[in-house]
Image (cartoon, rainbow, N blue to C red; front, top):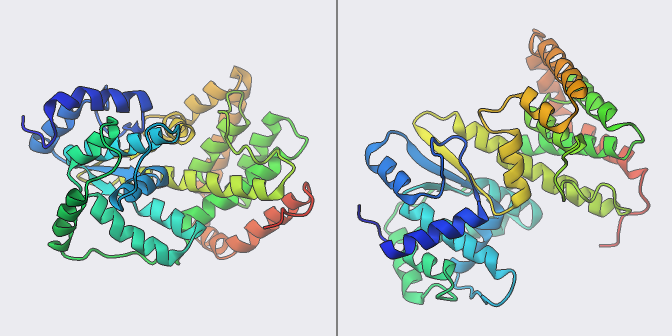
Length: 360
């Protein structure tokens, strides 16, 4: 089978990505997600378009490379560029449709919507770079994409019809929902209640005040459970309100990637992978929101048998109650209309646990 990269480099590429493990492929029927020939065979003979949702970590590095950025392979942070270059080489060779929009919304929310428009153009360029040029960076042979490679990609992009550019000034509806829920998780974490009481209170809040956001419930179940991953919402227990708010913002974006991945996975005739070089985010995707998971599995893995049964029963009862409410649609619309006020009220209550926000 012909590939646009050196076949002798394929084992090294697969080994690099296998070690970094940036692909979450629960929606793809494969036992080993880094075997390139499987995707090439699917593209040729299978049904369903292969698609990849990339996080900001990968997108920003791919954009940097497409803009001519050099990688100093002697620096520790160069590993993230090699992984990003390896992902781009793999995805382009495997004929994946690359979806960067959530990462661009995140960039716009944290920096500037107008700069996000420039990133759209740069990402289109990055998506048309010859994969061997990325692979040479991934394997440490080159420090940058040659200018002629970038020029060739530019010509390919110019030959295409301009694609639509989203309005990045509009806040994503599900990011606002996740931010509200994560703020409530943070508020509960600062309380003196037991871990078990916190998850039960969060389920009650989800039913009576929130949106019964399944992704956020999974997040809370892991966060309050006995197997909390290191670094998860780590600013909440600090003495800095600014660090806490930054943790909430970052976790809300993490949940936005996961909910978008799940939403995309329901599209007909498309098969989705989620790609992230953030090991915590990748772990959350695998342990909490894979399509074959159940809430009971999640509770069993993070709580004692007795606690898991109690939490699961509470979860089912609360979900049955809200989902059977004939006025649920109206209730949710009203809550969405007031989500800014609800979130600010939670953050105001949370701020009581801290002093004055950090300067700047």
